[in-house]
Image 1 (cartoon, rainbow, N blue to C red):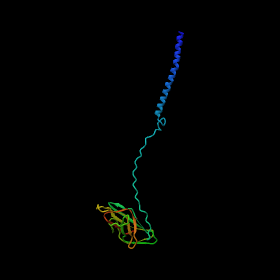
Image 2 (cartoon, rainbow, N blue to C red; image 1 turned 90 degrees about the horizontal axis):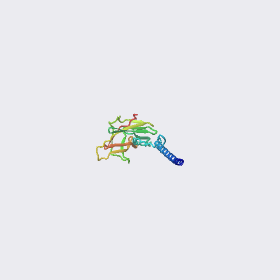
Image 3 (cartoon, rainbow, N blue to C red; image 1 turned 180 degrees about the horizontal axis):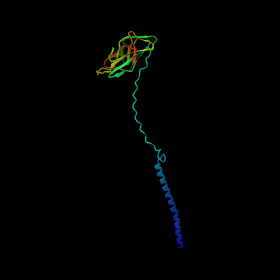
Image 4 (tube, helix red, strand yellow; image 1 turned 60 degrees about the vertical axis):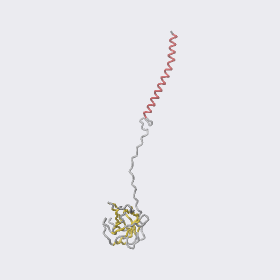
Amino acid sequence: MTVTKRTRIRQIGAAGPALGARTLGMRALGTLVLGTLALSACGPGGEDGAGAAAAPVPTPPTAPVPPQRSSPPPPSCTPEGIAVSMNEPDAAMGVRAARIELLNCGRRPYRLDGYPALRVLDGRRQPFNVTAVRGTRQVEDAGPKPLTIRPGRKAEFVIVWRNTVTEADTVAVAGAYLEVRPAPGRPVVIVPAHGPIDLGNTGRLEGTAWRLPTR
């Protein structure tokens, strides 16, 4: 009996270390699995997943910027001592009106009387077949009267036209320059248009007499 008990004790003792090693291995494997699951739940950036890559935010569309209208260069003072320029036209119901300003940039008074002589020119400064009419009913025209423009002062007149196209087989007029003869016997001045003088195919340009600026 003593021998049998000793044998059983040895068997239990031999099995004890093997069972303990297997138990420790299972516990270590369970700990490793739990740790891996915990890290997966936290995400790559920390415990709350704040460091995860955010979805790109779409950029709201922007309104297109309209192209700016180019203005003609500042007028230069001519040997006559004047500088002539064209302001941007006002348009309403197909009628255009633009002020033409004359600045006395010289040292002597400059005299005007009546209506200037006008011609509409193309980009090569060649004249169009356009009739320049003295006087208009589209804007106020006080008529001709003598004016003396002192140095540093201005005078002006207004041109009026309609942008009407009634003939498809006729080339529409789009003047790039306005030729101005301020008074009989005076040299002409070539004035760049502020936007095209688009007469369509009316072939008609009306103008007021010289006057002192109203503003």
